[in-house]
Length: 261
Length: 257
Image (cartoon, rainbow over all chains, first blue to last red; front, top):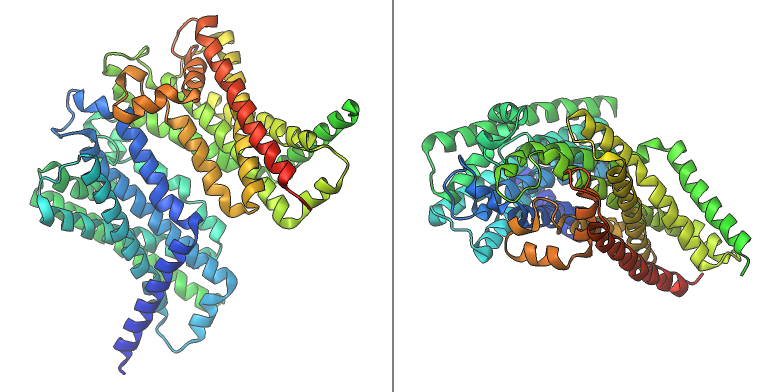
């Protein structure tokens, strides 16, 4: 068997392990699924009349607008959870055993990220199902839904890469877990939950340049039906930027860990 | 029953919880950080909602701060359950059960310490709130809000203790936190009741904590503090405390060495 096939098998096995690990531990599932779902429910019911505000985009209902924010929140948390699980593997010595095995070092990190991508896709499906049940209309139909799933999965990989880099650098789950509040800071400073033109300053100014705003608009527009090539390109561009940063940081952190031990 | 001995037990348990805070100050950070981020974030994101007809105030920061205060109390109170689960896992709680201290005194010690600990996020939130322009609620409004915070912390602790005694593992922590999250946010947290939509409006009407949120908010939104607006909150807090402390005591009596 050639090296590529071996590494592909390793990545697939580690990815499957990552997904199973998440679903076996309620404390890992809760932040990814339950918390964003509860927040979506509260915000939709509590701030639903926001669609009457002057300047709010044309949408069927507030749920249609909010779905993308919930999906992005969920995949950010999925990425963080992947980082926590990687740090736990480092703490208990599982990663050391993998490093001693005759496999590529990057396939160890990639395996974790493939699992995170799968979780991103699953959370996308979860929120699409919620949207369908509770009255969101997916204006662009199946192609739009597929685009949402792809963007959410890739975004989860990008965020997972950042968490993995921190996990590899620190080797401590508690530090990666400490990113949890930071996730909400960057979410609130984006257009995840409200249109940029209706955010208060300084959040509005920050949101204009926050990569999360570009990603969330790419996920949102297939729901509200105003998708443009520019929005899609910006969403993929923002994800590519985050992936490049996270890959670079992960590579540096992995090399350091191998050097330091 | 020896009341003096019971009070001494309660005092010692409160002091132990305080020592824990002094020795591990970082343990208080999550309970402070999360509601503060939510306060600043929600007021930046949903600040424009006050333009809708039906809001009593034009400051969303003043409207949402009491919710964050109660959220902080909820998280801090629920953390008492997580700490108890840790004590159960490590065997320390068995030693408490083996002591001659009555179960109600043990429960009182734990939940009263939570009510005091809930003041930590409250003080930070109030400082941050006033710094960013939250309206001064007046002395009466502040006292009422602080009372609601401490009582909510006590209720959250009863909830956390019940789950900790039932599941006996720290893995139940998300359930403890999520329970309080739901109780606090499925109210008029984001908007007045007449602006809530669909099922949330129905849930908020029957959620007893809605009365508490509304009462804690009175001073901040410039409403007069009247008995008519306050007693439903006091009744809701008393009812929740009675029910949840009964469950906590039942679990405690069922817990054997």
